[in-house]
Amino acid sequence: MADAKEVDKRPTLTKQIDLSVTDAAGKDLALTFTSPVTLAFDTTKDVKIQFGAREDRKGKWKIIQGKLKGSTFTLHVNELGNYTVVTNKGQIKKK
Picture 1 (cartoon, rainbow, N blue to C red):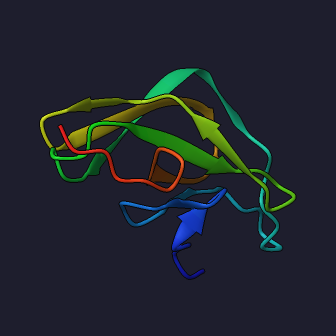
Picture 2: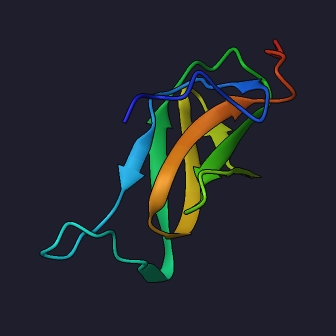
């Protein structure tokens, strides 16, 4: 799958992480974690506002909160899926 260049008209800042488990026939299994796990993305620290995004089973993206510390952006998730990092409203905000 190719990385999306934007999500909900917001530019993506990182490559996408696709977490999935498939059965023997190659079908994705809808699994969730019993407690949240942390995903970490390398990004640039000069962007003030960032959000995570998760693609649902219908191919629609959902914007979710994350946290930027230095140049590492972390996101706490409780389900498998396709994740990335995006800027706020399509604008890169400088500190």
